[in-house]
Amino acid sequence: MSVRFLLNGERVHVGDVDPHTTLLGWLRERGLTGSKEGCAEGECGACAVALLRRGPDGTPRYDAVNSCLVPLPSLDGQNVWTVEGVAEPDGSLHPVQAALVERGGSQCGYCTPGFVVSLFCEYYRPGRVEPDPESISGNLCRCTGYRPILDVLKAIPAAAPEDPRRPERRLPVVASDTESRLEHVAGARRFLLPERLEAVFEALERFPEATLIAGGTDLMVYVNQRAARYPVLVSLQGVTELRRCEAAPHELVLGAGLPLSELEAELAERCRGELGLLEQLLPLFSSRLIRNRATLGGNLGTASPIGDSPPALLALDAELTLVSRGGARRVPLIEFFTGYRESLLRAGELIVSVHVPRPAPRFQRFYKVSKRVLDDISTVAAAFGLDLDAAGRVERLRIAFGGVAATPVRALAAESAARGLPWDRATVEGLLDAVSAAATPITDHRGSAEYRRAMVRRLFQKFFADTALAAEAAE
Ligand SMILES: Cc1cc2nc3c(=O)[nH]c(=O)nc-3n(C[C@H](O)[C@H](O)[C@H](O)COP(=O)(O)OP(=O)(O)OC[C@H]3O[C@@H](n4cnc5c(N)ncnc54)[C@H](O)[C@@H]3O)c2cc1C
Ligand code: FES
Ligand code: FES
Image 1 (tube, rainbow, N blue to C red):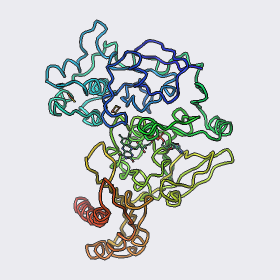
Image 2: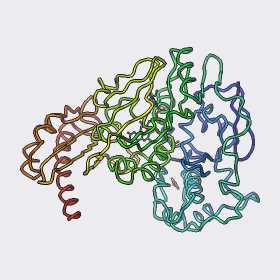
Image 3: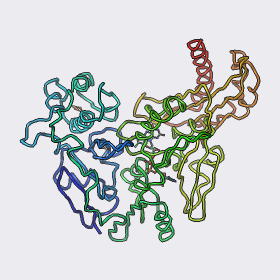
Image 4: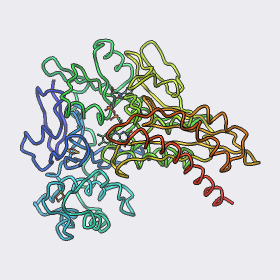
């Protein structure tokens, strides 16, 4: 079986290729060396390419992704544009390339193809009015300095209506010749691309040793950096049931397989501030390049103690729907993590959706402590939710942390001790010991146990200060 997709407008048909081959490795082997390898782990953006796909509202657009983390078979049926496909058909520079030249946005040039692709996607972003600095948040430059590059971002003009590279003029989004979908076999290794949940279960039954892959932003780092190899990979990227988002009267349902940038758009559209915790968290979650592929299911599926979504979802009292061929079960997130990188997930089972009960807490805050503000993993993450009664007493307090124990944790004792107390400085100071008792941190390269313990206390105090400010602003 083979992988077929559109590459810079041309149909390509790739025969027997190992499923662990990354798009970046394959492009460079093929002589398309514009995309660079800086890190092979999603950190630098030098490998960025654009996928032409439809947004949640159906509008076609370019999404920039890290080609070093994209397994080649996952592109089956897709429409891919690399930096080689950006320039004018006559070879003259695209406006974003010309602006980089004019404004001195490149020195050694190693990062430049990645910036060009990210700026290209931003140039054609549907409905762009203001430049979005997030569009280049996953691109690092070690020698030019960012100011000239930011100047380019701010100066890029609107795309002309007759521009042949506008996304709607480069359809189809999906290459029509897709009979090879569903299963890619190379030697003894397989990559399956089911489109329905039922087909996922069939695959898991046929291949009990199979590993699920969603955005691959976690799993492909192991492939690239630790030479991890999987006999069978079952991709969840096209599974319709995992992409559902819904605002029901009693709960919000978030599809576990939705790329996080689509989730951001859905939250802005459907929830309008109701899930402030997720809205504050998502811009801090790595970069646009990563969020264009990473999913909530993958973030929870790793059961990592430093994943950013678990504390936010714990503070929202989220539940998960886990589904296997035998049926579905609903599990409170607080019971899901059972140990370091361990969860309740059974063989043959996957996370289909995340459920947040309504009403969500009125005050919500997410804080991420990391060495860099953007594009970095948390040292400590904290999430808080609070409701007060008319007399200013605590009705509901939720306190959750990541990075301070073997699993994400909630400070349950502090939460119940707070009930009915006035939300003031004395209460907060009185709760500090109970809050920090939830943390059993270790020392690692991101921070010492002592530092993490101090952060837990400080972030709770910060939450109090922020709620006081928010209450003042509301008066
Ligand atoms: C440069 C970089 C920056 C990052 N920054 C952050 C950050 O700021 N915050 C953060 O929290 N994480 C970060 N990560 C980690 C990673 O991006 C996230 O954990 C992401 O949410 C993983 O989602 P994915 O869909 O890519 O998972 P994948 O890599 O596809 O899968 C991860 C694991 O989850 C399993 N899985 C996937 N989907 C499901 C499902 N529906 N049900 C059950 N199991 C499933 C897979 O089998 C695999 O074991 C970063 C990673 C990189 C490379
Ligand atoms: S090579 Fe650095 S992000 Fe891909
Ligand atoms: S121009 Fe050298 S890394 Fe950016």
